[in-house]
Length: 310
Image 1 (tube, rainbow, N blue to C red):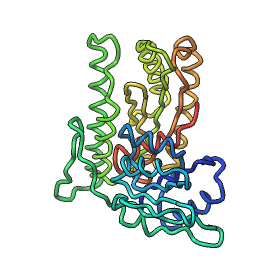
Image 2 (cartoon, rainbow, N blue to C red; image 1 turned 90 degrees about the vertical axis):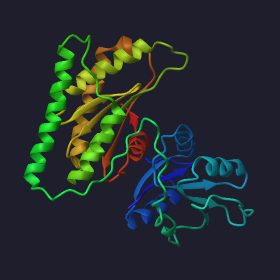
Image 3 (cartoon, helix red, strand yellow; image 1 turned 180 degrees about the vertical axis):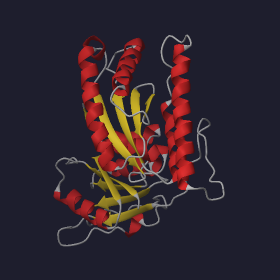
């Protein structure tokens, strides 16, 4: 199964056009996970290094050769299906992972999906601050023992976090969003469990330079969210986001947690109205491991692409 980003210039995930609906049906029938977004959002994410999908469907009109050049530069390591109009001029010097598909009447024809099959592309080189986890060959352990050990370690980390905050720090010690997400992925791979990711993003208002307002609002959001999640869940904070890792949760359980989190965020925004007026809109998106991806980049990309205003 691959995570496929279906992009379009004329529709959205809420109201897909006929072509996108047909593409979605075929790709889901082939067992792939689909996330729809605009072409702009996809290329912008690739430009800043946050594009984590395995494959991308990219429609290109006759008058958009620059779009092909941009995709070739930004998505060279991603499986891309370029949907071109019949009779369009030949496209030369494309990356090896690109496939050209002529746009057709997908009501009468089945959208091809074989181009996604070899999606196991070479992963990008890790950044200097990215930790790479090697899968070790270890003796099989009793499932109950593994579960108890994992819960003890998580509980210990949370307890240390609270004790650090109570030991004289001006505010609670915060878990780093990216590092915590990588740790959770490593745990999930070793123990064979799933988890949910709820990403709350606060956009900076144009022209605003008040970093303290952003920091205080993120702190307020985190405090309200802490009150409504389970003890086993983890609340983390980045420079412009608060994320909740919903432990051992499939899609339906993550959905239930998301409803509680959304109410807590709305309450926090209402109480911190002065702070919320200094920043842009607040959005919330979700992703589930391993349904929507098995890497940090894929999960964050899915959560960002599925985000909607709180």
